[in-house]
Image (cartoon, rainbow, N blue to C red; front, side):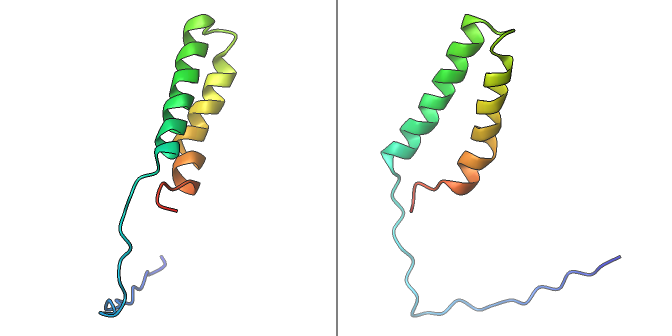
Amino acid sequence: MAKVFTIPVAPSPGRRRRERSSDSRYVEGQKLLVEAMKYLAQSDPISNRDAVELLSEHVRTRFRMTDSPLS
């Protein structure tokens, strides 16, 4: 079994954290995707199942991991 070693790093006092502020476009994009999934699921759940799964997978993985409201 492999061992995992961690090397603690002390924070440098000269480095400042940037102020966090949310991007309204990011939040609106998430809301838009959720509304699209709701519409597809209500209009014809059987034939739109693949599309809903694709959007759901995107929201759960890529959208949240790669997009950041802080960038």
